[in-house]
Image (cartoon, rainbow, N blue to C red; front, side):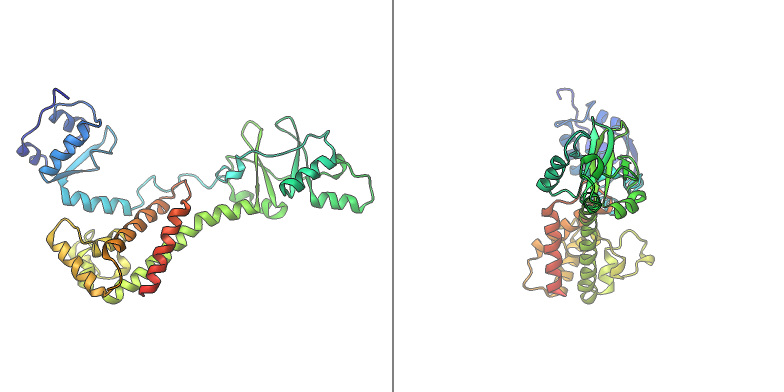
Length: 343
């Protein structure tokens, strides 16, 4: 960092409204790379000049072009960007069988020369309803189910692994295939054997696995929907249309509806947050909070929880591949419960 240089504030202010590359901004400070030293130095200089960039200099790609704006405008843009489903944030492929964890967690099986007793003992011990019979890693010979054992028993024939297993119409799919196309097979048989592209069996998906996966996916959507419904009831009943128009900064003034139903989660935060960039916004938020009349509610904590819901909402709205943790689902439940008491 010995070759760094500090540009005059006027040089930085001259960039306002201009589009610059990451490399150009670095060069202005006499550095070549973004690292733990150059990023804080440049961000501090921009803030001192009342400037910021869209996208953020600290996190954008190396070849990005950034618009230099007033710091307040960048804060508004951050909220707007996080509220939008930008191109590429929605999933670009359908739900795959491999998206169910049990499809890749391995599968217990027995070889075709095993005894029926060994197979049923494993099924009892592990509470399985079915057990594949596989030689090696990919030679599927059949599947033992409690139904197939019972059906053979009823005929009075000698029970062996070979005679009791199902060998026809075994539901098999590959990890890369679409899940929804195979749901009828899961409904009919109760399971789906899964193998990789190489032919090796990697797991088994049951109806219970699908239920659990969709519960963890759908529950957060319902909780966020409930929270937004309750928020609109709380805020719409107490706040005037002019207060709502003040935070509808994405639209020209003549298009601001003043309808709480047209707000996004970032707008809810701006309606109530005490610490904002301008004194006018702070005064408006103070007035809004007083209008709600929630004397038994801590404003700072409420807004913090509301902002956390905004973050979680954006995570699930962008179809993050990782399901929400129990802790985050708990946060949604707690806030939904609080709002029910305030309506």
